[in-house]
Length: 351
Image 1: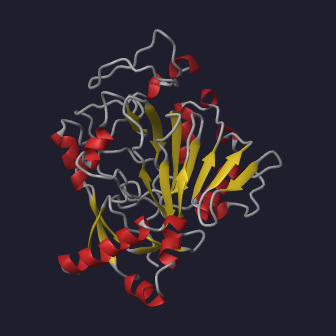
Image 2: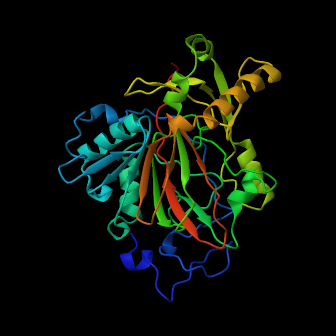
Image 3: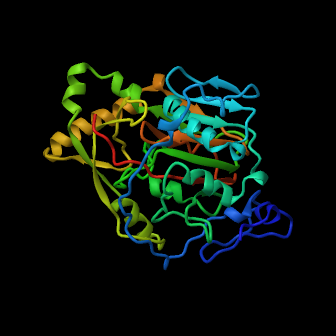
């Protein structure tokens, strides 16, 4: 049975608890407090047929971009801020158009969403329109709702900083979510529940524009190459800190340059978080090319944006053609809380 609005939102008597965390942070939505069960296990992900909903969409997007909707582009290459529409009220046609718009603009920021009108059941229903939702093998989820990946930071819980490494000078770590899956994600949803007044933003970049900036000769050299994306390090970190490893960590080979199934755009598909080596190359050769590409996307400020948030923001992005990084630019005395739903899509199509 779905929780009521009263169960989702905070009141003075509510304290989120589970088997791992202690403390009493005052959350706006304690229902989504991260839950860890080291005995929770998931079977291996099975391959499935996928048809992208964006392929069904009306290019004019009449069910999404209505007369009441305002859309403001953040940069020429990536990012659009949208007001005047509630995602929870979109029809199936509107969700198809959302998939297409996210592919075209890469990142969409929907402001002023009413989370009292969109509980976990409806959130999951929306996300499943885009594909089966990945259940994360190591992160905190929501008790009874393993589809949610919980992003959480307070004075006592700072796992992201631990994972990134406390001895690093910069917290920037570019990645495409769970790219190690055999069928990585497409249209991804991020619900902002509690957010610092300043800071705690996300950097996004267009892997399409990053690819376009390369010389034609170098583009041709990259096309046809494949790289290994690995979940092994992520699982090892969780195991070291006594966290869950819900299934055997996977490694998958994906093209360095992939093609979007709807827009036809070519995009780099490498990220420092999970891409480990180029297949068929010696380690030094692989490192040379991958480190160049990592450096190329990290320095591409003219095809990056900084997405700023507030409670009630829902971020939608296409993980096939973007990379992103958290910005840990606020003290952990300040609460930040969000949840992600990550529908999986097709096996990456080589360019």
